[in-house]
Image 1: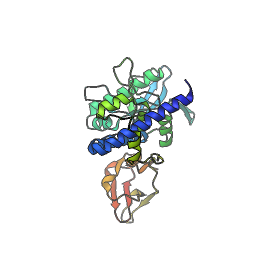
Image 2: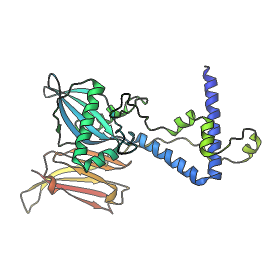
Image 3: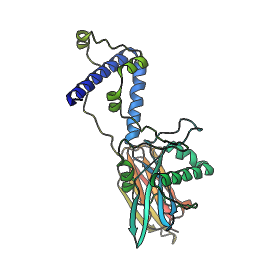
Image 4: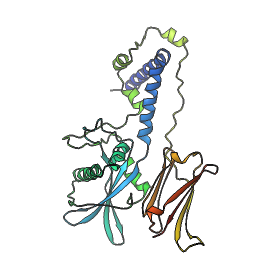
Length: 323
């Protein structure tokens, strides 16, 4: 088919879609608001970066090669429709690294954050999630893994940048997979523009009960459009905040402490921060604003960790005793 014909057909669909939205905004404002919010949230989820949750260590048979599986939370992966439905997930590229004369592999498996949050409260469900991740990796990369695996103390093997690259560089048509399905395919989050281009006018009319009157062009031209087309803005990936980590000791005792000072402009309450600390690392997340993952220079005692937030200066201070 001629490219110009395809472009003209797409423009016709887009113009009709804008007309539909104009009519919806005027005749049914509540439905219009719900429609826009739903698709804006879907677009935000699609561009939201993955975040580390846990790291599994397994062995690849028959040569006992080490494999690290980074289990991640990613809003782009849909949540199951119900507790009885299969759990959607997707995997990244398998990469091999050499470090200190040791070869090992790293791969990511991503779930919807809601799935990981529920599993966090139930040890059995958490183990099932880990087994599901390993089973998926075996099938996706045609590996034979040992039956035993270890949950590492650190939530991530490698760097956050590499983790994002292995997952987010996947082609857009890559499908998520689910458990217990012979042909596991789940559609990723749809872009609003993609839906505009693929919409059938009959479907739009039926769903919203709005008739597109193509014979009233003069009337439509006289009525100002309720939607103004502006240049699109890209989703801004969370940035790494300014921070400083030091190892010090108080004059009153000989206990050595690690102190982390993080500047968080724009944050007014500590409730906006999600903080996770282990013996080896610390993870700080502020949705769509900040992301910070650091490894401690020395192992710390988790029970001694203490965090304070200065609202006036917008500074988060975290301290922990060194083991």
